[in-house]
Length: 144
Image 1 (cartoon, one colour):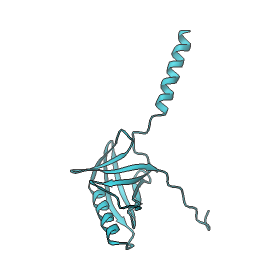
Image 2 (cartoon, rainbow, N blue to C red):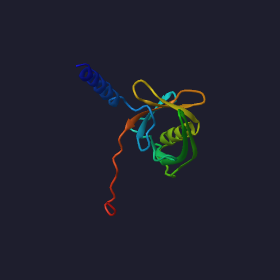
Image 3 (cartoon, rainbow, N blue to C red):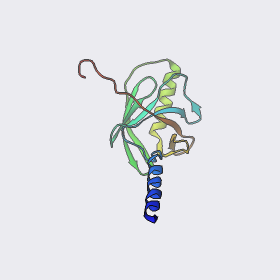
């Protein structure tokens, strides 16, 4: 009787742990930006961040695609060699994109909020706030 009670308690504990959200940044997980510091995004703009592998990050910057190298050490995160494509969009969207890229270059640490929102913190000031999203792979008609 004691063994079955102990086994039941252990299984309940394990199943509770498996339903816990991740507390680590995951490679290939994408996040959508909601706020850049103290400012929300322009309506219908899409800014994202994906840790592509153990060294590369990329995403959408609103108008252009961005890519960078990153280093992750526990809760420290830094992005280096940030580059973008070179499309031109509306001035307000371009201003938001430049603000986002400048914030990315200054990121020093990360954490998840209680609501599982990813917070990317610069040395001073408010964080970039992001939510996990699922980006569906786009199939190329000639290759896939």
